[in-house]
Length: 67
Image (cartoon, rainbow, N blue to C red; front, top):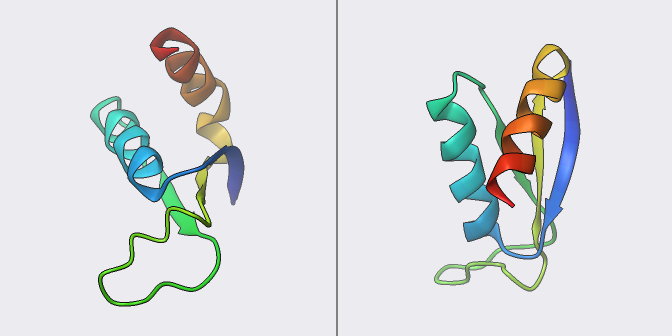
């Protein structure tokens, strides 16, 4: 089961953190909010970042170190 750990104002920001977590062995996923149109990054809607429940603490520790 996946758990939302953070909301990002930009999809690009969420994707960057997703890649960071992947480097640490965490299989995160990004769920975009709102509708997206061709050529639209959808950044006005933002995105949620999800990780497996078993990795929540590790992901939060990694995010805490990055801030």
